[in-house]
Length: 276
Image (cartoon, rainbow, N blue to C red; front, top):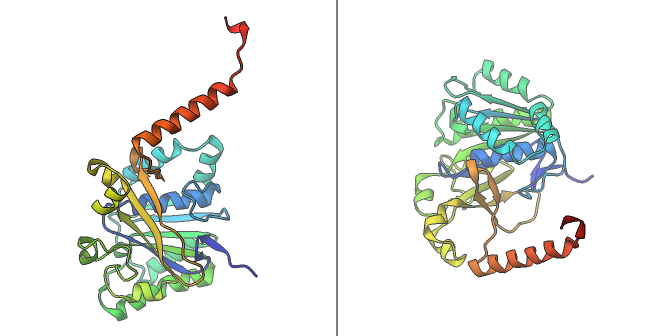
């Protein structure tokens, strides 16, 4: 029986991580993954195969910021797709609420909301517990709670998490053990991915001006137990921070591409004397 993947390498019914430094865009990426699952439109080519319902618990951003992101994203979708987003994405802003998955009350609340979901997003891990992330026993206890929900309900849980300060400062956010806190988080997760900003060297290699370097981010999978390695995927931040696939072309290449497209469009339009 073939495995059921939520995105590339991320099996349904398991817990996965998405790590990055603060401000890299992981919340937007997770939101776009949620929308891809809701609509079936995988614009970022992340391997979304099946549609379904998604629960997004947003612990870092206020409701008005989430509404603005949804508005910016909705501009890229049809009316029918927007209806699917509305009906299949349950987004809860929990900023300012003392959510703690280690208590019976909050564990039951999250588990109840997670029923029937293909994906549950926890944004971010530190907002949903009160334990010491550097302590291996505490980290194991947190992961065990998440695993209980994912296994019993056969739903995937994507946990957003920050990388350590050392990893961020040294440009090592793509390393498997770059996640902040105990290595247990990565060890126990069945899948881990990262989002990393473009370095000066990468910008030079791709002929990106330094003033535009921070618009680009790189995504890949740092750990997967059930899939093969993949190539890096580069995204560009467009209006509102919406991520789109990046295209690295020189100015001359872009001009040539534009010229070819213009010629193709002209060839498609036959002269019509009725217009004169």
